[in-house]
Image (cartoon, rainbow over all chains, first blue to last red; front, side, top):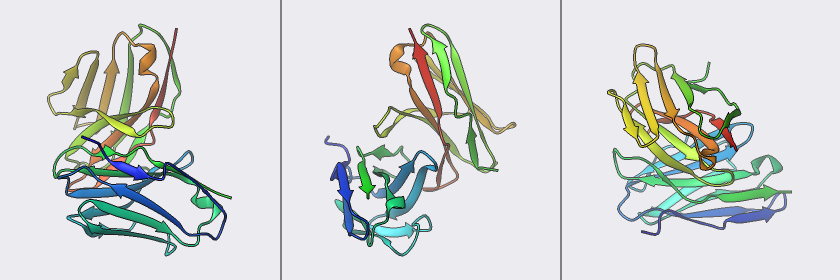
Length: 112
Length: 109
């Protein structure tokens, strides 16, 4: 089992640029989560999908953030335009209903 | 008040000692509980689920106290490799996992 796959692992971009983060959940898992982690705020849930449908996006900071899940094996988190305060580690996690979450290795984003 | 609270630490503990963390939660309707471990610059990984009757996995023991609304994690005979941040997670229902900010543990030789 390959686990949750995220790409890129590291991203450095300039303020104002568009950033797209990608996630492939574990096959068979029907729930997908995007998190952001910073030293100041800890682990924050951004959005949750169930069976490819966004259920709760109340954690998305603002309109600059958007997420999609076009099929069961792929999701993207997009930031447009990016700002320095978006610098963080972004984790994707997936799970089967009722079971624990498995996290991907994360994307370390730096916006200069 | 945060929904899930943990002492951020760090806890500096000599190798071989026993260490315990608590985590308090505010929602009495919370249904399930977990401890995750996160190593520096890595993703969180499930350490153990916490059951009402308490559960043990080797050197690790987790307990739930619903009356006082806290969960605990006990680590016996601590190893250098136990150094990590331990995250308390509370499931309010369905997908609503509430994460604590984590407790940092440093095991010293």
